[in-house]
Amino acid sequence: MVVRELVRTMGRIAAPPDASPSGQILDMLDDFLSYYEKARSREDLLRGLPVLETPNGIQEIGFRSQDFRRYLLARKPSLRDFKVWSLLHQARDCVTRPVKILGKNVRVWIIPLAKANIQREEFGGAQEAAPKPEDEI
Image (cartoon, rainbow, N blue to C red):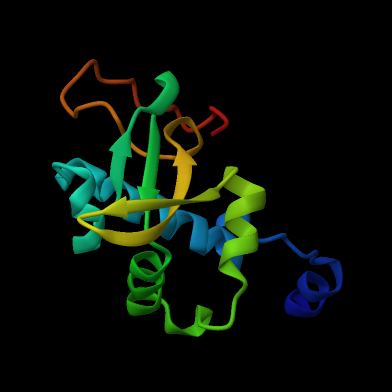
C-alpha cells in the first residue's frame, strides 16, 4: 500500500545539465584545457597540449581537434558519434585559426580563457565556511 502510494505520487526529476552528453563533453573539455599550464611554447601544440596565448590582449587557449578528440574518446568512447565541434562553437565561442608551427600548417581551435571553466586559483587560500544543512546550494 505504501509503495503504491509513493509510485502514484512520484514525479520526475530532471537530470542536471552536466549529466547530458553535451555537459559531459564540456566538463572533459575544461579538464583537457587545464593542461595548458604544462605547455611552454606554441610548439607544444604539436605534442598534443593546449597552449595559452594572449593575442590582442585577450587570453586564449588553443588546441588541435585531434588531441581533444583523442582525450575525449579515451575517457568516454560512447561519445564517438556526438557532434562535438558544433557544441564548442555554440557553448564556448570556439573558433578555428590556421597557424604555422615549425614549418607545419596546423588548424588550431581557440577558446577565450574567460569561457573555459578552469580553476585558476591555488588551493590553501581563504577557506569558505561549509554550508549549513539548511542553506541552499
